[in-house]
Image 1: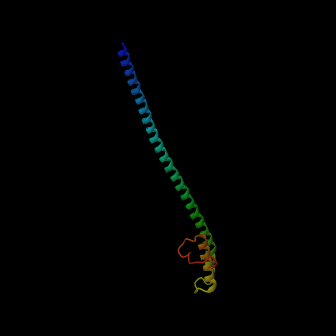
Image 2 (image 1 turned 90 degrees about the vertical axis):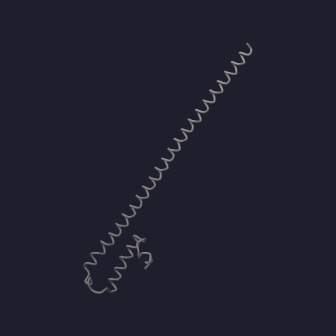
Image 3 (image 1 turned 120 degrees about the horizontal axis):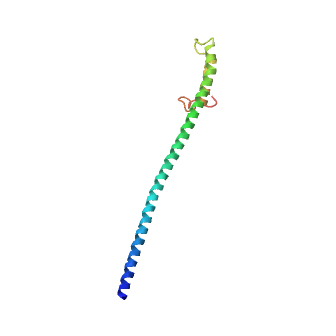
Length: 125
């Protein structure tokens, strides 16, 4: 009978060790599944953040372009009536007319300094 108790104890111990092994393996597999899900959600969050930053940057560029266009329209609107009503509109360019054109160019370059030709214009010129 002593041998039988030892065999039962060994079998119960083996069964307990197997059950514990399965439990630990299941927990580890579950953790890996959650780790993959967390990684996927983190990647989605990063993509959404980058898209939002891109949208804000595009909105800022659009606002800047609209403001620059508005300033250019204001300069042109002020300059066109003067140009159309001058007596020297068809005459060779004299100093007063050249000064008006240069002033309009400076205003446009102040509104949009990245335009071609604006880098050559000095701020005080």
